[in-house]
Amino acid sequence: MKKNTIISILAVLGIGIVFYFILQNNKKKNEEQVAVVAEKNTNVAVRTTLVKQEEISGEFMVNGTFLPNRQAQVSAEMGGQLISLNVREGSYVRAGQSIGRLAGEKLNVNVSGAKANLDNAVMALNRYEQAYKTGGVTALQLDQARLQVKNARTQLQSANLQSGDTNVISKVSGIVNQKFVEVGTVLNPGTPIVEVVDISSVKLKVDVDQSLVSQLSVGSSVKVQPDVIEGALDGRITFIAPSASGALKFPVEITVPNSFNKLKAGMYGTAVFSRSGSGSVLTIPREAFVGSVSDNTVFVVRNNVAHLTKIQGGVNYGDRVEVISGLKAGDEVVTSGQINLTDKTPIRKLI
Image 1 (cartoon, one colour):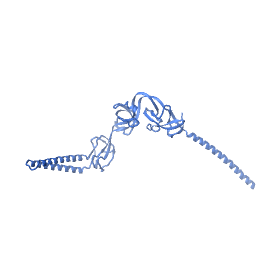
Image 2 (tube, one colour):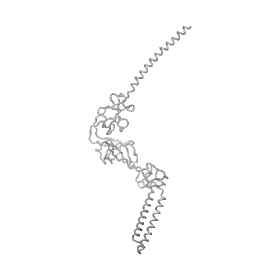
Image 3 (cartoon, helix red, strand yellow):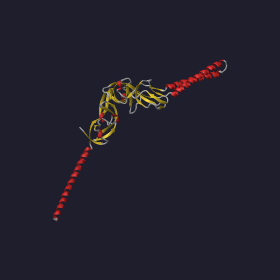
Image 4 (cartoon, helix red, strand yellow):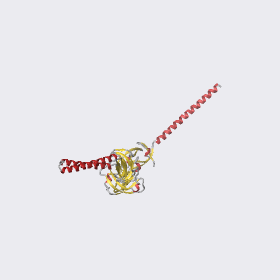
């Protein structure tokens, strides 16, 4: 019996050893397969295209932001407590309209005092003139009385002007965009009360490259395509900066009529300019840019590795963008799949 027990134990141990080696062998194969898959997955699938030298003519487009026709903060010209506010956010106001009033009791007292001083000075002058005829006062005393009347009249005019300043008047027409204070607030001179924005027309501000700005002139018609409205609107160039703002870009403003106030300040739009002549331009697809076109970064493929590269973009020709520097004809750039890439990521190209 004892011999049979020993044989059973040895058999179980043998079977266990065999299973152990089988499991270890399977584990090693699985790890090798996972490593192969992981190695393959490090190559990110992307689509690419080549940088081209193209003949470009006709229209070119520049993106920009709409600005209001006029924008101003209406402020109190004097200090005092705001006792009434006649407008609210969204109200339309006209130039010369009173939007509120400051407490004016103290100023009214000043007006009354100045008027009383003027009356006293006038009566004193009358007495001095009568006395001068009889030799009761000297010419110098009479001149001093006349000067006192003049000073008193000036003080009354000043008090009247200050009293009139209790009405806060808007200098521009437009819509109240923001209210800064509430009724009851004690204001210092120059404290903004409301902001008034005029969007009866808007201005699209764009930055035009030095190579093209010379072809533009103030007064020329330009087609404008707002991002939020279908179709193009007719605009007119009203300003071309005499100096570049940076990277040899010149600010240009295009005024666009704004029927029914559909366009708002801060919206985006595109100006479509007519370009004379033609020329050979280095271009890449718009979708090659990482983020927006203004970021000026692309992934350049060399030996199946994507390199994040800073370039200088130029004119926007719709679905293609001019390249001023950073690339050359024949370079390969990524056009799809950039979201999965970082600098120096191995890639595989999709056909």
